[in-house]
Length: 97
Image (cartoon, rainbow, N blue to C red; front, side, top):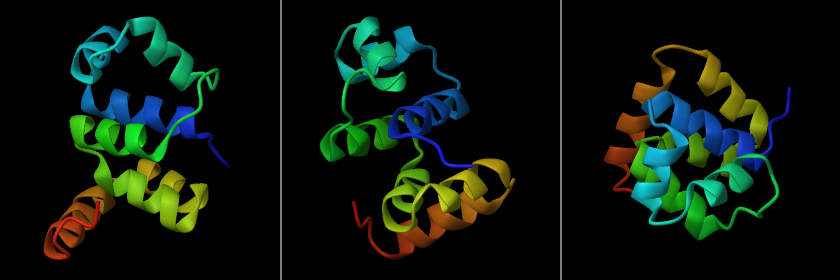
């Protein structure tokens, strides 16, 4: 199952336990922009995705999505414990982002 960029960001936000209102505060924008990003009405830039990933603590999901496509990202979303391993790998590699 492939997911869109907006859906990936929505899932990252949800995993972090943030509401759209809280995410808007973190991203310094309106809640409506968060909604439009998540539903695909606004294109996701790499810069915006990187900031979003850092704010939600989900850099590993973004790396998986960008480097290997949505199949790997979907696997990370649905496999408990894997996200922590990827986070450790990213830390060891010195923060590629």
